[in-house]
Amino acid sequence: MTATDFAQELERHRSYLLRVAQLQLRDRDSAEDVVQETLLAALSGSGFSGKSSVRTWLTGILKHKIVDVIRRKQRDATPVAALAPEGSELDVDDFDALFREDGAWQTPPAAWGNPEESLQRREFFDVLDICLERLPAATARVFVMREVLELETDEICKELAITANNLWVILYRARVALRMCLEENWFASGGSPARPGHRT
Amino acid sequence: MSTILFRLIHFVTCREASELLSQSQDRPLSTRERLRLRFHLTICDACTRFSHQLAFLREAMRSYRS
Image 1 (cartoon, one colour):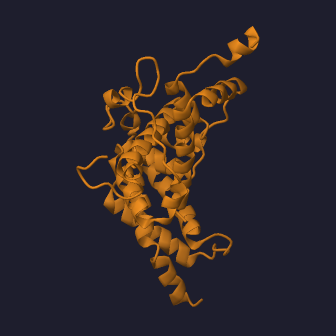
Image 2 (cartoon, rainbow over the protein chains, first blue to last red):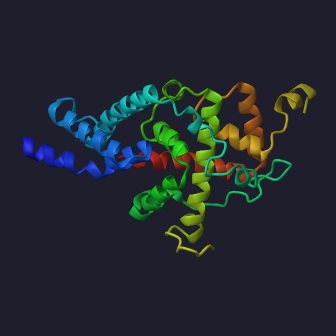
Image 3 (cartoon, chains in turn cyan, purple):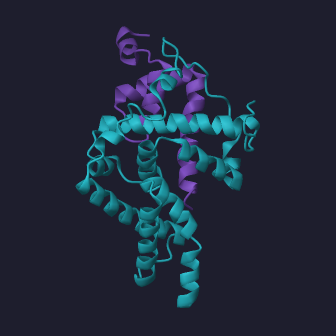
């Protein structure tokens, strides 16, 4: 592969990296900067072993860059309060409405058929994207750190200066909200994007 | 069922079970928690579905990057 081919190959992943960075940082400029740095680092470095996919390798670099940005932000101003789930967009009343007083499901999770098939569908990931964007910003940020960047829980707690308990609650809320969003907007309509305003 | 075993299992609600299922993706559950959860799942279809769906969500997020 020539250097130009390699640069073009890297360029192909820009929009994906940007999506991840934006979910994480919630700021277009910082996201673009961090992706630019990632691609530059990838170009100059010879770290690519060919053992993993280019995308996985780039995600690894992006992860370190994002952690740097978060560290810098932590130093400037500590937005720990912003991370508390209280008062977030996914409001507590909604959350309590999920379970009856005796702790049973208000609306039990429905059967999803064979969800793995959805992983082959591009539209499924579009719906997943929309669902991620609907999460409160702080919740989405923590969820992406855990599930896309695959940071260990103790690393996240350290980076964000939150307790393990707080982290579990945030991740629980994120998963429950995403599960519900996918059910309403994908699985309930039999594995296709639900039409706006139309619920089955 | 012996009293000791019964006490050990102690019924958890769907709400508690769903929290434990989520936490099992982030930390190792204690033996007692695992036992309670497993018992709940044998009698609760809704939480069993929830459990599979959480596993699927993780898989979907990993595929998101590949």
